[in-house]
Image (tube, rainbow, N blue to C red; front, side):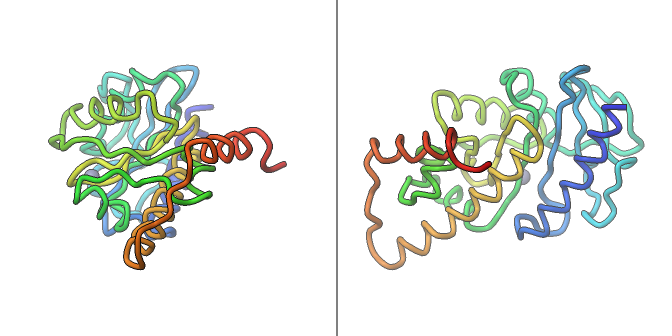
Length: 216
Ligand SMILES: [Zn+2]
């Protein structure tokens, strides 16, 4: 029953990716981990976003072995599973080639923390991971290595795109959306001049306020 709810959640949250301009055609993917069974619900490979239904989602175990599904899972499945195995606190992972964040990835640069919105959400820069080949768990290894010791829940992977993690699939989507938003503003700022840095102290204060006091 809970796995069925996760299937529905992951299928419907996929629609946030095209809705927020984060993906083109069939690129990008989202997964969620069921806390009780540890099973992972992930996008089928090569299906269009409009075709995704709860039934078309693929279920794999944490070693990326197929448990249930009529389609092949996303080509990034082994990397998602690697991240889940290494990061027990993670319950959702999103991958996109969203244009502004991926432009930073193409030049192999982290996104520096110039903005209060970025300090709030990311608590520092969005780091850039090294290039890794697609298809196995190499990307996952590089994501885990790059996120270690960072407050950011998102990473831009060199020459590739964004990986974002969260306690839930919805949190991971939020991180991917905010990553693209701050990547765009930071890019625009660099076209106008040299962005004014935020001090580490201000970044830490903003992040603490946002994560402990903001909201209802
Ligand atoms: Zn990709």
